[in-house]
Length: 302
Image 1: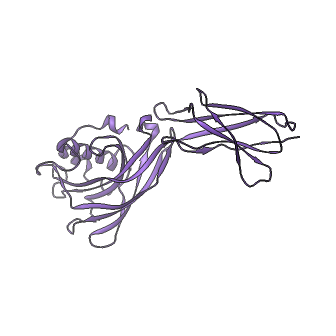
Image 2 (image 1 turned 180 degrees about the horizontal axis):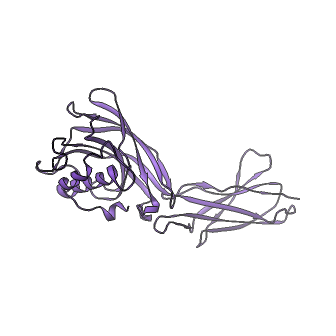
Image 3 (image 1 turned 120 degrees about the horizontal axis):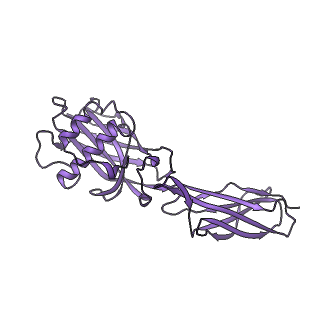
């Protein structure tokens, strides 16, 4: 589900009928909690001109919920490939009014992340299920939830790679009229930062093997990264990659030279063989692509 491309502009009342009963008993991707939260947030955004509440409550509106969020924590980055489901955990403190029953089936809360501005995000990602919360006091709880990413379902564009921000929401359905009553909602962004990165791959091959001491070794490789729009890996071009060497028995690698990937992401350079050891390429990463070191290639020098 490409969220930003497929979410319909719905009213709170329409979303209510589908959301009722799923808050505490949500199902998997593309249904239940996840899908209805997207609709409700889109409704609030469209109706209010910003995330938040509709101007006047009544008859299926989205109204304020006495809840706030703090101590939001999430990983600094997450690597996303082309097809595999990736989940990242977020924790936060929920503070709520005494009249909000967080154990009720009508209540749900969860973290999410968004790209761009909070009022008009370029994209956003949610969890398949609500967060689980443990009460600390009568009005505070610590909550843990996941954000689920499905690159194989077209959720991400390549332009989405980079910095995203953390957010959290809480919803409470009018239990007296779950299909047509109000939904109370609290929603806050700017709670944290996470880099959503296009996963990288890197290879190294040194030849010939074995080689005579003093002879020339040719070291080839390829730097590729995930393309979220066709679900394949493509060459990462014009990137600086270090060729590193570790002599047999040594503790660590030293950098021999820096090589630039060509128009297809390929790497190629030459060095003189000196002693038995391991060669590898090492990529420091960019703001959109994670750092990676290739598997080393051992060369026997005669």
